[in-house]
Length: 190
Image (cartoon, rainbow, N blue to C red; front, side, top):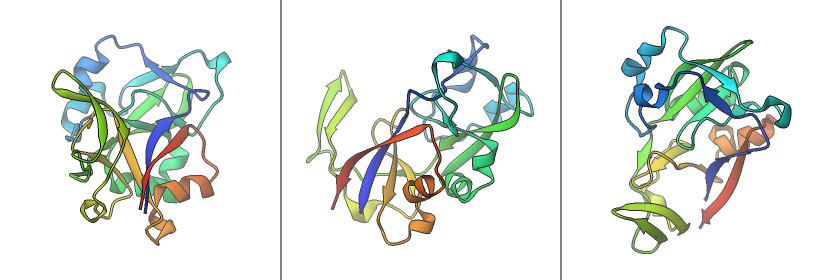
């Protein structure tokens, strides 16, 4: 089993919002359902625009904030989209001057799987600010391929791979489909 921290490839598109109150309205992307509060943005969700499009390359996934995954409608209709949808709540979104629908994944799958006694981390006040050496309890990781842990829920998204079923593993399906916009940092393996 291998666990990767999902990060964004910052050479690819990043999104900004023209709604100055977006983050107050949407809240952070903790593993709590947002569909009711998301309705304030309308049926098609909030509208974003590309940050410095001349300096970045398009990608299938775009950066909005570390605790969410934003992806194109074409991804949503693929095998990768099926895996994403199983791991959380898919919310609608739009990108300015782009007719394709976009989706924001609010990851709801959360596992109490990080061994905090064996992991190395840095605190900021009462919160874990950074984990430098992850140690996982593999028997506490459920069936879903994309998940959050009991700490850093609003900023860290993980994916598990190499459990014997690459057809249902986000990491392998992402690479097999040739998708772009994400980077994967291997943080643990058994």
